[in-house]
Image 1 (cartoon, helix red, strand yellow):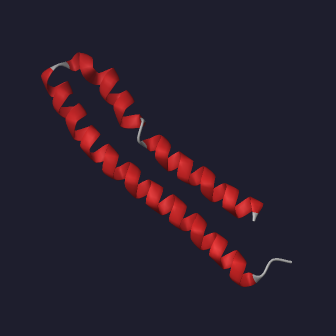
Image 2 (cartoon, rainbow, N blue to C red; image 1 turned 45 degrees about the vertical axis):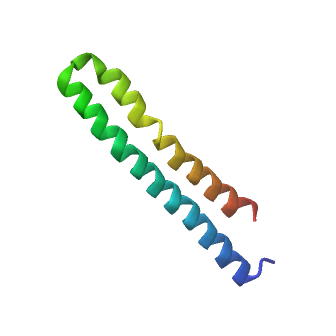
Length: 75
């Protein structure tokens, strides 16, 4: 049987993992998105590269979700 305190700490850790990963991804995407829009305003052929560079920080949020799921289902 899992101690309720331990279950609460696991849930807290999972929430922190998702929250901090989301904040970090948002901060990275903010700078990259602004630069991508500026580049596309000058030349439309930068759309693909700008889109790709905007998606890369989002993988960090997915990693945070994976860590949270591992915490919730393993412990």
